[in-house]
Length: 225
Ligand code: PRT
Ligand code: ZN
Image (tube, rainbow, N blue to C red):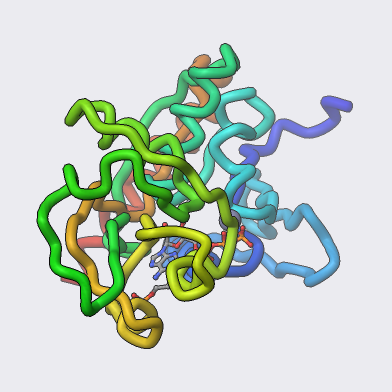
């Protein structure tokens, strides 16, 4: 099983973070050929291998120590953290870096023609979301409650379909809300992609490689400014 001592890095296989994640490692000088069908891709010029998975799996893989590093949106990281805490699963990790890509906000939106009278007006109402934990934390902090309508996709159609009074979903340009007759009324969380590492110290070689990677990433960020 332990025939290799490569640094194992989890990244999103396909989605909004995958191109930027790939480009980041490329700019760091890591040569790797990804195969569509393969879960693992080994770098050709460094002792690193990439595990390509769904973004939702990445925080757990890091917190369970299955991989050494992961690139993930803070929204998914924070939601997973809250879920795992409530289940008594391990939640430790190290935050190594916040990137300038993957930016979005988790917002409450309501039908465009409704008047917004503050979060209190949603007390006890049905809200569609893929982020029940972050929403719960926000409502609880204000002494409010909501009834969840849990959807992993098509959240924005829930009010029109009569499934919910409001939604809590990720927004970047706002075009999706607009196209679905909704308006953004409250931002509850702002997110960017970040690099996390498992909590327990890796062996000296791996720790050294991580340090070198971080220096390169810093250089990449500076070159883009
Ligand atoms: O298959 P897998 O589970 O890996 O991917 P996924 O479909 O769960 O995630 P994906 O690829 O859509 O998003 C990955 C991460 O990108 C998110 O967790 C965020 O950290 C980040 N991100 C940045 C976004 C957006 N911007 C974003 N706009 N994720 C989703 N959206 C969606 C949003 O849910 C809504 O449907 O885009 C729509 C809104 O966009 P605008 O531009 O119309 O406002
Ligand atoms: Zn996902």
